[in-house]
Length: 343
Image (cartoon, rainbow, N blue to C red; front, side, top):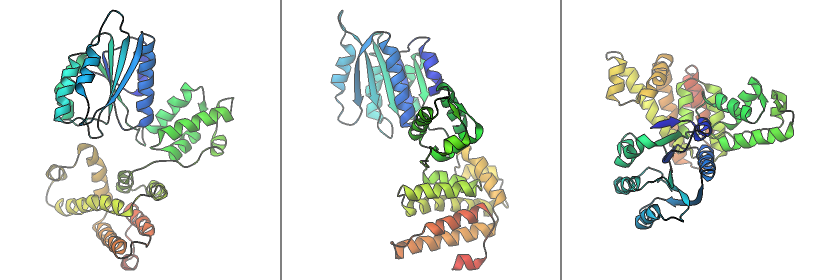
Protein backbone atom coordinates (compact mmCIF):
# COMPACT_ATOMS: atom_id res chain seq x y z
CA UNK A 1 0.00 0.00 0.00
CA UNK A 2 1.27 3.45 -0.91
CA UNK A 3 1.39 5.75 2.14
CA UNK A 4 1.33 9.51 1.69
CA UNK A 5 0.90 12.74 3.62
CA UNK A 6 -1.82 15.15 2.41
CA UNK A 7 0.74 17.56 0.94
CA UNK A 8 2.01 14.74 -1.31
CA UNK A 9 -1.42 13.69 -2.54
CA UNK A 10 -1.99 16.14 -5.41
CA UNK A 11 1.29 15.28 -7.12
CA UNK A 12 0.47 11.58 -6.81
CA UNK A 13 -3.03 12.09 -8.25
CA UNK A 14 -1.47 13.70 -11.32
CA UNK A 15 0.21 10.35 -12.04
CA UNK A 16 -3.15 8.54 -12.23
CA UNK A 17 -5.94 7.23 -10.00
CA UNK A 18 -5.89 4.16 -7.77
CA UNK A 19 -8.90 1.94 -7.05
CA UNK A 20 -9.23 3.11 -3.44
CA UNK A 21 -8.04 5.85 -1.08
CA UNK A 22 -7.94 5.46 2.70
CA UNK A 23 -8.02 8.81 4.49
CA UNK A 24 -7.17 7.98 8.09
CA UNK A 25 -6.65 10.46 10.91
CA UNK A 26 -8.26 12.92 13.28
CA UNK A 27 -7.90 16.24 11.49
CA UNK A 28 -11.10 17.57 9.83
CA UNK A 29 -9.24 19.94 7.50
CA UNK A 30 -6.78 17.33 6.20
CA UNK A 31 -9.55 14.76 5.76
CA UNK A 32 -11.81 17.13 3.83
CA UNK A 33 -9.09 18.65 1.65
CA UNK A 34 -7.77 15.19 0.78
CA UNK A 35 -11.27 14.01 -0.17
CA UNK A 36 -11.86 17.14 -2.25
CA UNK A 37 -8.55 16.66 -4.10
CA UNK A 38 -9.41 13.04 -4.94
CA UNK A 39 -12.90 13.92 -6.15
CA UNK A 40 -11.53 16.76 -8.29
CA UNK A 41 -9.00 14.43 -9.90
CA UNK A 42 -11.72 11.80 -10.37
CA UNK A 43 -14.04 14.35 -12.03
CA UNK A 44 -11.34 15.07 -14.62
CA UNK A 45 -11.35 11.34 -15.41
CA UNK A 46 -15.11 11.16 -15.98
CA UNK A 47 -16.33 10.26 -12.48
CA UNK A 48 -19.56 12.26 -12.47
CA UNK A 49 -21.66 10.58 -9.76
CA UNK A 50 -20.73 10.92 -6.09
CA UNK A 51 -22.22 8.83 -3.28
CA UNK A 52 -21.51 8.88 0.46
CA UNK A 53 -22.48 6.54 3.30
CA UNK A 54 -21.85 6.73 7.04
CA UNK A 55 -21.32 3.20 8.33
CA UNK A 56 -23.25 2.20 11.44
CA UNK A 57 -25.28 -0.81 12.65
CA UNK A 58 -28.24 0.21 10.47
CA UNK A 59 -26.30 0.54 7.19
CA UNK A 60 -28.18 -0.99 4.24
CA UNK A 61 -25.35 -3.04 2.78
CA UNK A 62 -27.63 -4.55 0.14
CA UNK A 63 -28.23 -1.13 -1.39
CA UNK A 64 -24.55 -0.33 -1.14
CA UNK A 65 -23.56 -3.54 -2.94
CA UNK A 66 -26.20 -2.92 -5.63
CA UNK A 67 -24.75 0.52 -6.21
CA UNK A 68 -21.30 -1.01 -6.73
CA UNK A 69 -22.67 -3.54 -9.23
CA UNK A 70 -24.83 -1.08 -11.20
CA UNK A 71 -22.98 -1.15 -14.52
CA UNK A 72 -24.32 -0.48 -17.98
CA UNK A 73 -23.17 1.04 -21.24
CA UNK A 74 -24.72 4.35 -20.20
CA UNK A 75 -23.79 4.35 -16.50
CA UNK A 76 -21.45 7.13 -15.43
CA UNK A 77 -18.33 6.52 -13.42
CA UNK A 78 -18.86 7.10 -9.71
CA UNK A 79 -17.04 7.75 -6.45
CA UNK A 80 -18.14 6.15 -3.19
CA UNK A 81 -17.20 7.69 0.18
CA UNK A 82 -17.54 5.51 3.28
CA UNK A 83 -17.26 7.17 6.69
CA UNK A 84 -16.08 4.66 9.31
CA UNK A 85 -17.37 4.77 12.91
CA UNK A 86 -15.31 6.76 15.41
CA UNK A 87 -13.76 3.61 16.90
CA UNK A 88 -13.25 1.97 13.51
CA UNK A 89 -15.15 -0.92 11.92
CA UNK A 90 -16.28 -3.83 14.08
CA UNK A 91 -16.11 -7.51 13.08
CA UNK A 92 -19.47 -7.43 11.28
CA UNK A 93 -18.49 -4.35 9.26
CA UNK A 94 -15.13 -5.92 8.43
CA UNK A 95 -16.94 -8.82 6.74
CA UNK A 96 -19.14 -6.50 4.70
CA UNK A 97 -16.16 -4.34 3.73
CA UNK A 98 -14.33 -7.47 2.57
CA UNK A 99 -17.28 -8.27 0.30
CA UNK A 100 -17.34 -4.71 -1.00
CA UNK A 101 -13.60 -4.79 -1.78
CA UNK A 102 -14.30 -7.65 -4.21
CA UNK A 103 -16.87 -5.53 -6.08
CA UNK A 104 -14.56 -2.68 -7.05
CA UNK A 105 -14.11 -2.03 -10.77
CA UNK A 106 -12.62 0.59 -13.06
CA UNK A 107 -15.74 2.77 -13.03
CA UNK A 108 -15.96 2.89 -9.21
CA UNK A 109 -13.51 4.78 -7.02
CA UNK A 110 -13.65 4.08 -3.28
CA UNK A 111 -12.77 6.64 -0.59
CA UNK A 112 -12.73 5.42 3.03
CA UNK A 113 -12.59 8.04 5.80
CA UNK A 114 -11.97 7.39 9.47
CA UNK A 115 -9.69 7.65 12.45
CA UNK A 116 -6.29 5.98 12.49
CA UNK A 117 -6.77 2.20 12.57
CA UNK A 118 -5.45 0.00 15.35
CA UNK A 119 -2.97 -2.76 14.53
CA UNK A 120 -5.76 -5.35 14.73
CA UNK A 121 -8.04 -3.32 12.44
CA UNK A 122 -5.18 -3.00 9.97
CA UNK A 123 -5.01 -6.80 9.72
CA UNK A 124 -8.66 -7.10 8.64
CA UNK A 125 -9.36 -8.91 5.35
CA UNK A 126 -10.82 -5.85 3.59
CA UNK A 127 -7.75 -3.76 4.43
CA UNK A 128 -5.26 -6.34 3.20
CA UNK A 129 -7.40 -6.97 0.08
CA UNK A 130 -7.06 -3.29 -0.86
CA UNK A 131 -3.36 -3.07 -0.03
CA UNK A 132 -1.93 -3.54 -3.53
CA UNK A 133 -4.33 -1.13 -5.27
CA UNK A 134 -4.89 1.67 -2.80
CA UNK A 135 -3.29 4.74 -1.26
CA UNK A 136 -3.38 5.54 2.44
CA UNK A 137 -3.23 9.22 3.39
CA UNK A 138 -2.23 10.07 6.97
CA UNK A 139 -4.59 12.83 8.11
CA UNK A 140 -3.37 13.13 11.70
CA UNK A 141 -3.03 16.68 13.06
CA UNK A 142 0.71 17.49 13.04
CA UNK A 143 2.39 17.35 16.44
CA UNK A 144 4.19 20.39 17.83
CA UNK A 145 7.56 19.39 16.34
CA UNK A 146 6.14 18.90 12.82
CA UNK A 147 3.82 21.91 12.77
CA UNK A 148 6.34 24.62 11.67
CA UNK A 149 7.21 22.58 8.59
CA UNK A 150 3.50 22.17 7.76
CA UNK A 151 2.88 25.91 8.16
CA UNK A 152 5.90 26.78 5.99
CA UNK A 153 4.73 24.43 3.23
CA UNK A 154 1.18 25.80 3.41
CA UNK A 155 2.42 29.37 3.19
CA UNK A 156 4.71 28.54 0.25
CA UNK A 157 1.81 26.92 -1.62
CA UNK A 158 -0.07 30.23 -1.25
CA UNK A 159 2.96 32.25 -2.44
CA UNK A 160 3.44 33.73 1.03
CA UNK A 161 6.88 34.59 2.41
CA UNK A 162 6.76 33.65 6.09
CA UNK A 163 9.70 34.42 8.37
CA UNK A 164 10.63 32.09 11.25
CA UNK A 165 9.31 34.33 14.03
CA UNK A 166 5.93 34.69 12.32
CA UNK A 167 5.82 30.93 11.79
CA UNK A 168 6.46 30.34 15.50
CA UNK A 169 3.66 32.72 16.46
CA UNK A 170 1.19 30.99 14.13
CA UNK A 171 2.16 27.61 15.60
CA UNK A 172 1.70 28.95 19.13
CA UNK A 173 -1.73 30.41 18.40
CA UNK A 174 -3.17 27.62 16.27
CA UNK A 175 -1.56 24.35 17.36
CA UNK A 176 -4.11 21.53 17.10
CA UNK A 177 -6.50 23.70 15.06
CA UNK A 178 -5.44 23.48 11.41
CA UNK A 179 -8.75 24.86 10.14
CA UNK A 180 -8.26 28.10 12.08
CA UNK A 181 -4.60 28.18 11.00
CA UNK A 182 -5.51 27.80 7.33
CA UNK A 183 -8.12 30.56 7.71
CA UNK A 184 -5.51 32.80 9.36
CA UNK A 185 -3.15 32.36 6.39
CA UNK A 186 -6.00 33.18 3.99
CA UNK A 187 -6.81 36.29 6.02
CA UNK A 188 -3.16 37.35 6.09
CA UNK A 189 -2.86 36.92 2.32
CA UNK A 190 -5.76 39.36 1.88
CA UNK A 191 -4.37 41.84 4.42
CA UNK A 192 -0.89 41.82 2.86
CA UNK A 193 -1.14 41.40 -0.94
CA UNK A 194 2.66 41.52 -1.29
CA UNK A 195 2.73 38.16 0.54
CA UNK A 196 5.45 39.15 3.01
CA UNK A 197 4.43 37.91 6.46
CA UNK A 198 6.71 39.33 9.14
CA UNK A 199 6.16 38.99 12.88
CA UNK A 200 4.68 42.52 13.32
CA UNK A 201 2.24 41.92 10.47
CA UNK A 202 1.13 38.53 11.78
CA UNK A 203 0.75 39.87 15.34
CA UNK A 204 -1.90 42.30 14.12
CA UNK A 205 -4.13 39.60 12.69
CA UNK A 206 -3.93 36.45 14.83
CA UNK A 207 -5.84 35.29 17.89
CA UNK A 208 -5.06 32.43 20.24
CA UNK A 209 -7.15 29.53 18.91
CA UNK A 210 -4.88 26.61 19.73
CA UNK A 211 -6.67 23.38 20.59
CA UNK A 212 -5.30 20.87 23.07
CA UNK A 213 -6.31 17.75 24.98
CA UNK A 214 -5.36 16.82 28.58
CA UNK A 215 -2.73 14.50 27.10
CA UNK A 216 -0.91 17.49 25.58
CA UNK A 217 -0.77 19.03 29.08
CA UNK A 218 0.63 15.88 30.66
CA UNK A 219 3.25 15.55 27.90
CA UNK A 220 4.37 19.14 28.51
CA UNK A 221 4.76 18.35 32.22
CA UNK A 222 6.81 15.24 31.46
CA UNK A 223 9.10 17.31 29.23
CA UNK A 224 9.44 20.06 31.86
CA UNK A 225 8.06 22.76 29.53
CA UNK A 226 6.32 25.10 31.97
CA UNK A 227 5.37 27.86 29.49
CA UNK A 228 3.80 25.33 27.16
CA UNK A 229 2.00 23.58 30.04
CA UNK A 230 0.51 26.86 31.28
CA UNK A 231 -0.54 27.85 27.74
CA UNK A 232 -2.30 24.51 27.32
CA UNK A 233 -4.03 24.91 30.70
CA UNK A 234 -5.25 28.37 29.69
CA UNK A 235 -6.74 27.06 26.45
CA UNK A 236 -8.35 24.04 28.15
CA UNK A 237 -9.92 26.37 30.70
CA UNK A 238 -11.27 28.69 27.98
CA UNK A 239 -12.75 25.69 26.16
CA UNK A 240 -14.59 24.61 29.31
CA UNK A 241 -12.62 21.44 29.99
CA UNK A 242 -13.51 19.64 33.22
CA UNK A 243 -10.67 19.84 35.80
CA UNK A 244 -11.53 16.35 37.02
CA UNK A 245 -10.55 14.93 33.61
CA UNK A 246 -7.18 16.69 33.81
CA UNK A 247 -6.66 15.35 37.33
CA UNK A 248 -7.51 11.79 36.28
CA UNK A 249 -5.20 11.99 33.26
CA UNK A 250 -2.31 13.31 35.35
CA UNK A 251 -3.00 10.87 38.18
CA UNK A 252 -2.37 7.84 35.96
CA UNK A 253 0.94 9.24 34.70
CA UNK A 254 2.04 10.47 38.13
CA UNK A 255 1.44 7.14 39.86
CA UNK A 256 3.34 5.42 37.05
CA UNK A 257 6.29 7.77 37.63
CA UNK A 258 6.22 7.10 41.39
CA UNK A 259 6.24 3.33 40.84
CA UNK A 260 8.97 3.48 38.21
CA UNK A 261 11.11 5.77 40.39
CA UNK A 262 10.87 3.41 43.36
CA UNK A 263 11.37 0.18 41.41
CA UNK A 264 14.19 1.49 39.18
CA UNK A 265 16.54 1.38 42.17
CA UNK A 266 16.85 -2.39 41.73
CA UNK A 267 15.30 -3.17 38.30
CA UNK A 268 16.42 -1.97 34.83
CA UNK A 269 14.10 0.67 33.38
CA UNK A 270 13.57 -1.27 30.15
CA UNK A 271 12.19 -4.23 32.11
CA UNK A 272 9.92 -1.90 34.08
CA UNK A 273 8.61 -0.31 30.89
CA UNK A 274 7.75 -3.79 29.60
CA UNK A 275 6.12 -4.75 32.90
CA UNK A 276 3.95 -1.62 33.01
CA UNK A 277 3.24 -1.80 29.25
CA UNK A 278 4.55 1.68 28.50
CA UNK A 279 4.20 2.48 24.79
CA UNK A 280 7.48 2.62 22.89
CA UNK A 281 6.94 6.20 21.70
CA UNK A 282 6.45 7.41 25.29
CA UNK A 283 9.47 5.69 26.83
CA UNK A 284 12.06 8.40 26.01
CA UNK A 285 9.79 11.13 27.42
CA UNK A 286 9.06 9.20 30.63
CA UNK A 287 12.70 8.19 30.99
CA UNK A 288 13.79 11.85 30.77
CA UNK A 289 11.13 12.83 33.34
CA UNK A 290 12.39 10.18 35.77
CA UNK A 291 15.93 11.55 35.50
CA UNK A 292 14.78 15.15 35.97
CA UNK A 293 12.24 14.70 38.78
CA UNK A 294 13.34 13.93 42.33
CA UNK A 295 11.35 11.73 44.70
CA UNK A 296 10.47 14.83 46.76
CA UNK A 297 8.85 16.48 43.73
CA UNK A 298 6.81 13.38 42.94
CA UNK A 299 5.73 13.06 46.58
CA UNK A 300 4.64 16.70 46.67
CA UNK A 301 2.85 16.37 43.34
CA UNK A 302 0.83 13.40 44.62
CA UNK A 303 -0.07 15.38 47.77
CA UNK A 304 -1.11 18.46 45.79
CA UNK A 305 -3.11 16.38 43.32
CA UNK A 306 -4.91 14.63 46.20
CA UNK A 307 -5.68 17.95 47.91
CA UNK A 308 -6.98 19.40 44.65
CA UNK A 309 -9.24 16.42 44.06
CA UNK A 310 -10.66 16.65 47.60
CA UNK A 311 -11.32 20.37 47.08
CA UNK A 312 -13.12 19.62 43.83
CA UNK A 313 -15.33 16.98 45.46
CA UNK A 314 -16.16 18.95 48.62
CA UNK A 315 -16.78 22.31 46.96
CA UNK A 316 -17.50 21.84 43.29
CA UNK A 317 -18.00 25.57 42.78
CA UNK A 318 -14.47 26.41 43.88
CA UNK A 319 -11.95 26.94 41.11
CA UNK A 320 -9.00 24.56 41.14
CA UNK A 321 -7.24 26.01 38.10
CA UNK A 322 -4.69 27.78 40.32
CA UNK A 323 -3.85 24.42 41.88
CA UNK A 324 -3.43 22.91 38.40
CA UNK A 325 -1.03 25.73 37.56
CA UNK A 326 0.84 24.97 40.79
CA UNK A 327 1.08 21.32 39.80
CA UNK A 328 2.45 22.38 36.43
CA UNK A 329 5.18 24.52 37.97
CA UNK A 330 6.03 21.85 40.53
CA UNK A 331 6.55 19.16 37.90
CA UNK A 332 8.42 21.46 35.52
CA UNK A 333 10.76 23.06 38.03
CA UNK A 334 11.93 22.31 41.57
CA UNK A 335 10.15 21.01 44.66
CA UNK A 336 8.20 23.63 46.60
CA UNK A 337 8.38 24.39 50.29
CA UNK A 338 5.94 22.10 52.12
CA UNK A 339 3.95 25.12 53.29
CA UNK A 340 2.74 25.59 49.70
CA UNK A 341 1.62 21.96 49.55
CA UNK A 342 0.00 21.76 52.97
CA UNK A 343 -1.72 25.11 52.56
